[in-house]
Length: 290
Image (tube, rainbow, N blue to C red):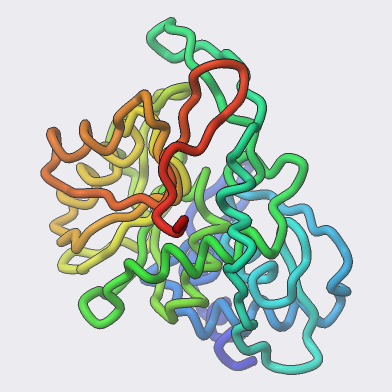
C-alpha cells in the first residue's frame, strides 16, 4: 500500500486545461519510471471492488496499463481485478493458442491512410478490443512476448501507449520489468518526435523515458512500421539504448519489419504473420505452431 501512496504524495504538477493541474505520478505519467511492484499494488487495490466475472471498461490513453495489469492478475475480460490479497501472477496455459485463433478469419475494414491511400484495418480483440480483449488472450500474449524480453539486460519495457498500453501492463507483471512509453500528447516533456502510421499522423512524446536507459520495445501489431520507426527515433534522440523489439503480429503484405530494419537497423521479432488479402484475415506464420 505504501508504494501506491508514495506515487501520489508530494509529487510535482504541470498545467492542464481550464486552469487545472496534472499530477506527475509514477502511476499515470510513468515519471521517472513505473516499477512493476507499484503497478501490481495499484491493480490489487482496484481488485477489491471488482469481481472476476465483470467486464471492465477504461480510458486507454491514461489507464490502459492499469487495465492490462488488472486483467492479467484477476482474469476479467478487457481490464481488471479484486483485492482481498496481494495478487501473484496466474498460471498461464498457452496450449489453446488463443492468439492464433484471435487473428484467423477476422473482418477487414477499408480505411484511408494520411496519404490518401486505402488500407485494410483488422477488427481483432488484441488491438481493437472487439468484442473485448479476453484475459486468456492477454495472458497468453504477455507470456509469448515475455519469452523474448532480456530481463537482465534492460532497465525498462517501452511501448507506444495509445495502442499498446494494456499489453505493456500485462508484460510488465509477467517479466517483472519497469515500464515507460510514448503518447500522442505532450506530458512532462514537450518535445515530440513525428511519426506516421497507416491511419494517423502526429507526434510521439516521452513518458518515463530517461537518458541512459536501456530498453526493450514491445508492440501488438506492426503494419507499415511507421509507429515503431517514430518511437525508435524518439528513444535515440533521448540517448536511450535499444536492446531489441518484439511484436505480437506483423501484417504480411506491408512488410513493416523489413522497413524498420532498413531505416533504423533494429530487428523486430514477431510471433504471427497475418495476411490481409481478401475479405478476412489469415494467419500465415505462427512461431508456436507445430
